[in-house]
Image (cartoon, rainbow, N blue to C red; front, side, top):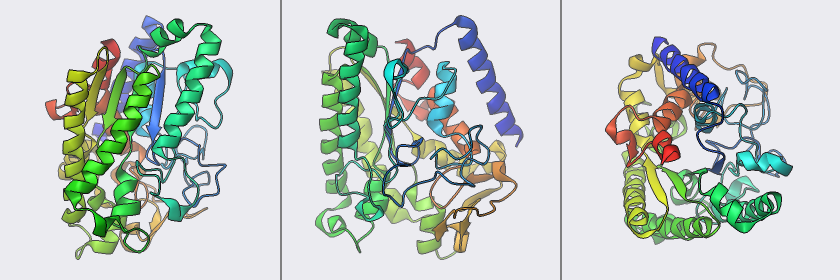
Length: 361
């Protein structure tokens, strides 16, 4: 608990410094991702992947918004640290000049592959999120009145992309619904995902993006849901899944290096969410955590067999749980991940820049 308090104080100090200096250190922040960072885009979709109900948002100042957390997500923490005085608006609600601050395109259940997450209903895939961004860029051009002006403005913005988790959780390791697990080896599947990922990054680059933060996949095999299903003791992570996640992350690092060497005027970095998460699980007391293998809110073994139900009473000691529900970290963990993404605590947290460095380049 003390560790979390220290982190919160650090955030408040950084925010105060940014506010004192005036504007945010980046003019806008564009967010692409899945349920880890969705802030309400799925609320109006016909989807099982929604979180616009209590107790989601129980510790968030605006209550249940569609965030899959008791409070802030990692991108909310990063938004604060960048110096914005309000959170980035979801695409479904973004209107007018508000888009000049950035837009959150993230959609729960979304993946890099088009079919990923389809058993949960409607969602906005990575390609769909990028198409929405292309639409936003045309609006930015109209607002600023000139393509060169828009290109100059967008070149200073931060673009964070965090997708891939569902391509494993709700595709590759779900043979009842998908055949990819039998069609691809873990290595060839990761290569396919990276190739598709690359296509979307090129579209973003061609539409003015220059500062990219690519967020690696976390250790999905350690989520309460996977522990409930596949762990004999409810504690030991599923190495089959984590191994596949590490293969993807390794290829993502190589992609960052490739783009940095071959993309004029652009800067790419990798955020090691897997490593930051592993540190929290390996050293929970350092961060004030007591429970690393169960959700604060959920049903069944590890509170992970069914995720948090509408109106369910969550645990009271929420800051002591790494996980809020069967799949998603709670605010306390998001503060750690977001803070270390923004300003790395260890050299391995980000490669080659943290987000603060990326913004200042």
